[in-house]
Length: 65
Image (cartoon, rainbow, N blue to C red; front, side):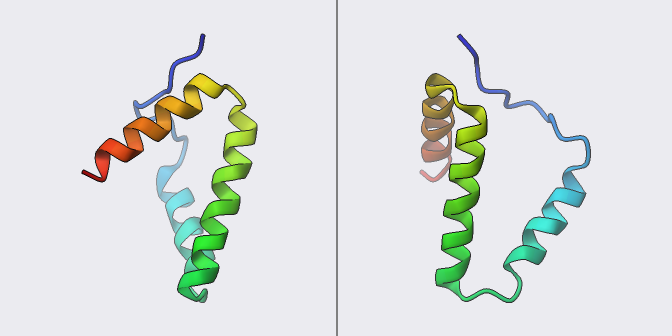
C-alpha cells in the first residue's frame, strides 16, 4: 500500500508555481475553478491509488480548518 508523500518532492517547485499562477492569470473565477478541477482529476488519475488519494483529501480538508 502506498503512502502520500508530504515531504518536498519537487524538482523545481518555483517553476511549477509560476506556471500554475500564469495559467490562472487571465481566467474568470469560474474558469479558474474549472481549471483546478481538471488538474485535480488529471493528477488523481495519474496517481491512481485510492488510498493515497483519500489520504490526500483528508490532509487537504484538515488544512482548511
